[in-house]
Image (cartoon, rainbow, N blue to C red; front, side, top):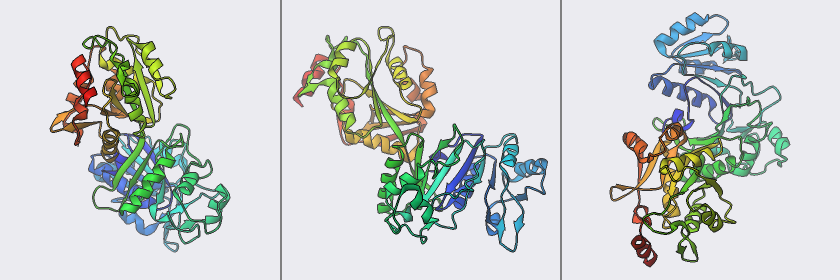
Amino acid sequence: MRLLTALRLDDGEIVAFVGGGGKTTAMFRLAEEIVEAGGRVITTTTTRIFAAQIALAPRHFSAFEATRAQIEAALDKQAHVLVTGPVNTDEGKASAVTPGLVESLHLIKDLTAIVIEADGSRMRPFKAPADHEPVIPDVTTLVVPVVGVEALGAPLTSERVHRPELVRALIGAQEGETITPELVARVITHPQGGLKGVPAGARVVPLINKVEAPEDLAAARGTARLLLAHAAVSAVAIGAVKRPANPARETHGRAAAVVLAAGRSTRMGRVKQTLPWGDTTVIAEVVRRLLASGLSEIVVVTGAARAEVEAALAGTGVRLVFNPDYETSEMARSLQWGLKALPENCLAALAVLGDQPQIEPEVVRAVVQRWRETQAPVVAPFYQGRRAHPLLFDRALWAELMALPPQANPRQLVGAYAARIESVEVETDSILRDLDTPEDYERERER
């Protein structure tokens, strides 16, 4: 997966990389991908970078020697321009630009992104910011705190940490203490740590870098879970930005379930959501299995049998939403009511049938994992070539879902995105089985 996909980059973004563990490499890799995708990008720094790194950009300007017109002309030719302050050849470093200059550069037309290195780390994979840093312009839309995975498991000393004394002071850690995922997450989500200087409204997507070995991936995933417990973190990217291909491995974000339970059960002849199922009911079993899947939130959309369904789910902790249009609408309307109930920081939603008590947590987790690996607009499970539920919809597609007419089925939109559907082949036909008729119900109970 490309880094720009993992960071969920939109056109016109101003991106600030902070922290340690490969910021400069990540900045230039992101710029390279933007150019490959047909965009135009300016890289810059509000700290200092090594003069030798200037060669990583196809064109360089000193901010005090170039006009905006010159920079625009260079972008027309090379699509990527690096802008710094003056280069000090004795120190071997290029100095910073001002936040005001970044705001001015942002006015250049047809600019895909400005990418900024906003603090230094002296080549260490982990750090806490000093008083004078980071320098993040107020117009920044995305802040990426970077940490190198090699810091995990190492002692909290200057060998792996830039300014370890600041890390200790920030969270009350001890000198030489082992750097754990918990410790990293506490520093990154601290207002004076990784969140320091983040402008209001900017997204925060930490990047756990240099993840290659299986044990590194496991540690990075554990760190991502801890980071996502903090509301300010939008998503967490995991990867190795020096890799020649697919520098990002996964993006972890909050995925929820919208359980569609508003139907009138006309073919069943009675309320199917509250039919007995083992020691519980059909709808309660669906919810129980979803709770075991590790989703961030579950919304159940009720309709025809509102009171009965709500009673069946009492004490489960799920959010209940009523679809007042259940008599005159189809599945799309219930999904729309469910999506509207989800929080702003939720990045994906699974449409789950309320009459599918055989849904398996392993299938749900596999669908979510494929989304993490691709950030695809739609992810669907398949059994022997047949697509079924639960369907996962990335937030990028929600506006189109919300625009569907009341009588629509989300399958209509899925068909429009057929070429971009990520499929997950599963080994169980449970995804194909729901309870539409009394015969379905009796057959599935016997299973």
